[in-house]
Image (cartoon, rainbow, N blue to C red; front, side, top):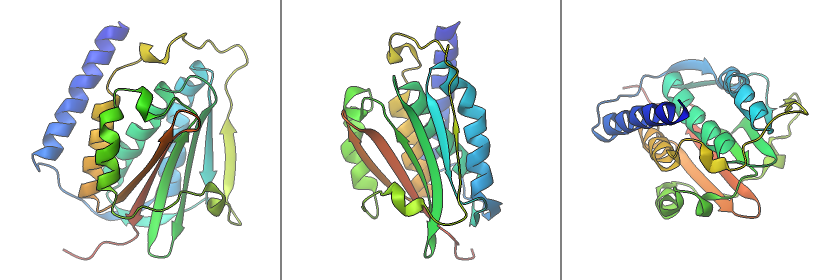
Length: 212
């Protein structure tokens, strides 16, 4: 059953990627609360993290009204969170968000093995090249007054699989989708990864889009 689910998910991801690469998806801009979106996705993915014996920490301002394509931002963040949860053996995943000047950002940081240890390793150079603005990711900058911060903690008796590679092998496809969605949303994708510290993805979005 796990194998069938994995293949089904992979097929769906490949179809998503094919539509994006064929230019068959457009950007639909409207106002939405990015903080509410990130919190909701954290809650949705919390059972998977708990099952894996991982924590899932959410941190950011309580409300963040932005302009953008809410559906595509959701797909982008879901891909990043799922990859981090499914390929992390110990520790957990931090999901944070905030704003700076005319931009806002989402960040997903895990304590996993780093991209060099997974099937997405060949994509690292391409992801760095796709980054429109390389800058240091500093989580402490997100600690502004009025932020909410809570940890979705795993149960003490959680069972964790002996190998994180028991999960779907679609990491590379998921990150390709993230890259294409960033291009569609005029977003900057930044990545830092090592076997010692895990992987951090930071996506910087424009807070407003020019009228069509």
